[in-house]
Image (cartoon, rainbow, N blue to C red; front, side, top):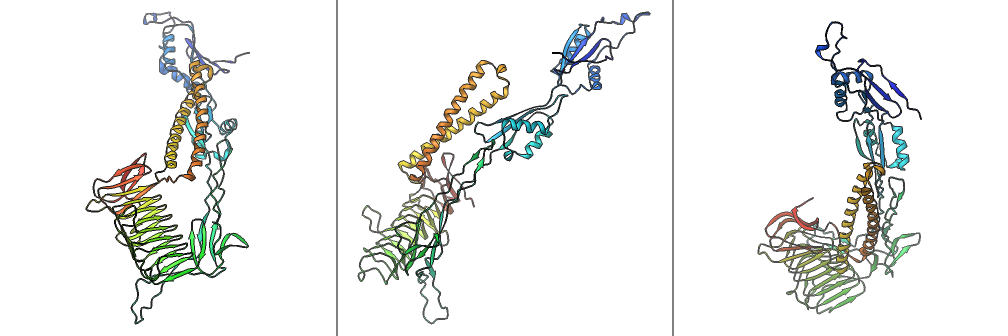
Length: 563
């Protein structure tokens, strides 16, 4: 193999530059000469040459167009000393280097990284080089960041950029059920009538005729696939479907539309999380000695009160236009009480209990045991009550004083109140998230997943640094062994993360652990209020205004109320 050498005509006979075109190395040659002194400047002796300088060497290189080469530290200074000492020989000064580009795909294939070394007198980085390297790394064009590619092309020095990002999948939306009619209609009063207006007559049950559409199911969507940086499709998580609850009661599926429910009979529509039904409606003046206990397959309207000691159990909604005193009310739909609900002190054989598959609403609750599969709403106050809601507990969110004082409130979504606690510092317990075996296991698995994912990220960063060090022959056997161990560990971690993720997904339907659980207080939060969120506990020690209490980084934080 021949090496092309380019001899450069020296401007000074004491040295010359020589370029090896094949290797790109630039040599400085010190020619034979003697070290001159001022005593050599005599008649008949050769003319004394100007002493060589670093500036002169750099000027010469610039004139020849080689000042843009890569010069190791002090290489010119060392050559100058050889020249000054007339130390004959051939010395490496610098090197012509083409731009270098390396593109690596992350282990998880979520990003592609470009590491560029600029040209030193050689061929600069071009878009053609980038395109070729992208093809070599199998990076999909759809994932490229055009701005980062432009920045890479225009970089004056070394660059290390993430030039491609995976396109995340868009998960599908869950199916949902939308009621098409109201369960209640507002009562219109004649302001000009001579009779006194009964302010308790606010709503009446809404009845529907057979054949009327009452509910539509919006089907779940499959989602939109994503793509990793190599072009591989990333499947989205499809939305969860809902099936209308069976057996149907007073409803039927529309013949031409499987997502539409029609009323099969005349009656009152009752909506649940899984569907709807149409119930016949019973109307009574009051629940008292004249009616006795009521057990009815339908909906119930009570125009006055439910008196103490009576039991009401219906499959549909309950509308009470008066109040409830020390009674038990069980509903397969909603319970709506225009007045308040009053019981005795809470005990195991407590005699004032409300249970509903839907919402429970009243003006106030005092010494009441409440259980709702949906939300609980109160206008004025919840005082010394035992409340369980699979949805949220809301006090005064629309109007009213909105106080929660004493007792125990457990919700799976959130608690919203104007005032929480009291000036007397009455002990008040608010709990978010159910404390069950499934929830505890889900919490533990989630923490393990976060830990393993963090370990995976750290090890991947270490491995990337080793890979960027250089060729395997130049980084040493010890480092190579370390890299292999890291790769094996990453493989084990990936399997463990996949296993944990599968366990979490299987457990989620059996647990009710919810993220972003928050207690919101729009007016005052008093001392001696205890908040438990997903098994963490916090107690208020001072009076605060407009705050929210939530879980953050493994602890409960009380901070300013956010909109």
